[in-house]
Length: 326
Image (cartoon, rainbow, N blue to C red):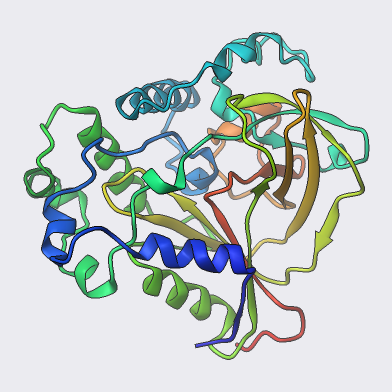
């Protein structure tokens, strides 16, 4: 395995998500979190969605998945703030699902630029935990096994949790687009194996994530870029996005097309500060025409660079320059 350089806070976070309550490992599987599955649409993982999918269905699913947060008491008053976020006035954006407000153009990355951004507010202590590899490997992870899985986790077939699990399993089984490698990591070990397979097992790698310096209930607000965004050299990049499931699942993917990684210091209009990770995809010609980013930005595949911010519980793995082994 390659040498991994991570910040101490991220390293602690990765260790924490590997832990779970109870001395009996089987209990961690048979008795999931009492509050169900923390859910929410993660639009950043949809690069490989089928071309037959409709843009409006993604927006509707965004509303439905966001409603599932009510199960966990995580719905906050911050959504009321959406009504007066108009950094990019547009008739079609006025009625857009808030969780889609993460996309922007690379030209926007300049000091003083104000961008409306949606950052989900999740409590890490209530997030699902990774299972050890031997435990996760013992649990089926396929759409075909969904009825059996619902019995294991004691979720009714027509419940919001069942729908969230079905969506996750379905997206994990979608075929990758041209030039993409993907994996739904069911354990920390499988995530690290995938990253090392992409970069080379002797490569030195680094993980980045968005850091919030203040606590806020506002999910969507106008953020201003405080200083020149810092580009992080990344000859190769693997993005890992959280998925809705009883235990931690990360949708990790690598694309052969060129991307740029930035750290961006932001300040919200209510005083929130964040050191956010942003990724810009220079070639989107192979993406589905129905990808939500094109609807948000009003562009077509391959016409412009598409950028997006990462929420705090998503990870960006990069290989250090000139230290990549094939």
